[in-house]
Image 1: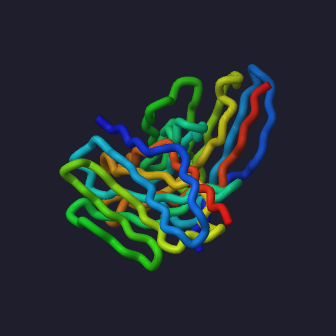
Image 2: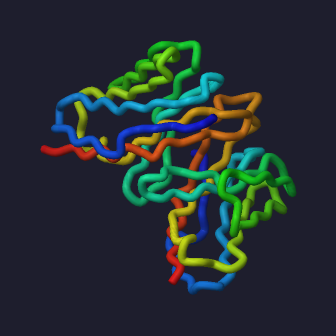
Length: 115
Length: 110
């Protein structure tokens, strides 16, 4: 079974703290993505990566950075958390786009609350 | 541009059919998708349709695509309580990106 694992399901942090969200996939997928999900806004793409050490900005990259040192791991970093970053964060992966339908495989999400 | 729109809520009686509608704007989209999110879980692909198709059926699910109107719908026959979830419409915008709608929360009542 394909698996995308997000290490933390629930986190509570204080304003100004540095936050790491980790995601690991075991499907040898080239592409990995970080989305945030907010009610009424759906999923918005923060960053994605199509290869190790490669990263591309999505629609809402401000306040976030990412790291992909190994193919299976994609980390989302909030350098200085703010209350408007309280949200559900979803990691996803997909195989090389030229060989597939573009389907994304999602983790179960990390719900972050910033106080 | 890329903008996917869908209504936010749908309430349906158990055993009836549910129809969830979606409009998209990017006429060059090659694939369109329906994802399901159950409470506390991530998104799972329900079905997808290639842009040269008008209809796709998969057991209780029927997807209809009207390319002229850029309208996509998902019909769930014989809706069950386990179908209560948020349903997301998405379009493939480019090689890497999917654009998602806001999600339709489907509530199945007895």
